[in-house]
Image 1 (cartoon, one colour):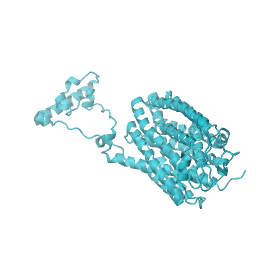
Image 2: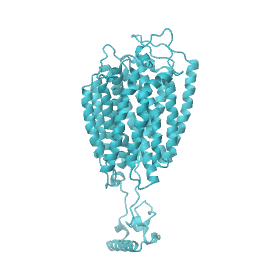
Image 3: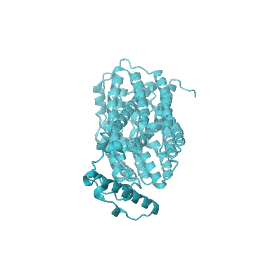
Length: 530
């Protein structure tokens, strides 16, 4: 079988885009936490950022369809994405002095004269020398005059050695209210916002353009998208090893190798997209009335609700999973030296062992089982995956769980975008894709807030267990809703001026059309033989 040269450019784009950004986008929560942002504030950020993506998605998708400016939007999204993920590396860390404003302290001259101040300093130095020479762990609180040393409105530290300068004081995470007054925090936020605007638009436009290129061969979408997963897995392994190697002898991980790799690959991707042949849609201008009628159908509403719920679970996984891996690894062995290699292997197995096989087979699986059954499988496997994460105590045991990412993410993503494409009225590919992915972004936003709060109060393992149990509960609701649709809702005919048929009954796991409906060849091609 020869190579389809028409599909080669879109395959190349998927490979370069995911290879160029995945190592950094997947590590973004860790990079931001390394800058000095707590898990709770991280949750607030990942609540706001998907909302930014939701708004950007809605506007850019509709404009691309209405103005037929897919290439312009495409190139702009790649530029914004590259700028956002690369700039954040160069932002300095948040310092405690920047984050927490100093409390007013008592002036020692108000408690005594300069002579007593000098005497106190000499006495403290004498105590410190005595403690260092003795090495004793006795309680030395009685040696310290609380009124002379403790700042006004503060309590004496529980460990007097901290006050005497023999041990470093533990640093507390800064709250969001403290960070609001920090300019460095806003640099981090705006970099993340630009990255989110770029990646949300790029994903939507990429999939819409891919379906335009495929035409009636929509069932081949997974075979194009899998090249992105291959690129992501390849650079995940290499980037993790390079970061560990480059960071030897440094106090913390340095992501410079990932940044350089990203800049090179994204520059190549920009050239590929600039030369990509995008089919035009002459005479097919989007009609918002047709789009609204399509989205108002009961089975479509359940589909959008399921996309939202999967967005919550996958958003939790993407933002907090590597943080959980890091915390479990440090609890298992505080001197764990292969952390980035473990995280790189984690992403590699997730991609090559889970996503690639299921992306390749996704068209056939959707054809055989239907979109409803595939969504049910994804709900079941993500419930299992989240619960398994919660019981891991040895960090290496995360690796076999990643094989579940195939049915969890790959099957779900393929059925999400292919079903969105199949119900889209002519000329509204990017519009419907943006609406569906906005529901997903809204779920990811909810995951940021919910996950950050739960991670802070319950810890990582209990948080993932709670989300897993919640997914099980929604799986039951999903089945009941489709049973009710099957029992009480009949197929409805929604025709635009072009005679487009927008809906069919999908609750049985396959598409049933009534005798008087005009078939849509592009829709039927999704379920034809692969």
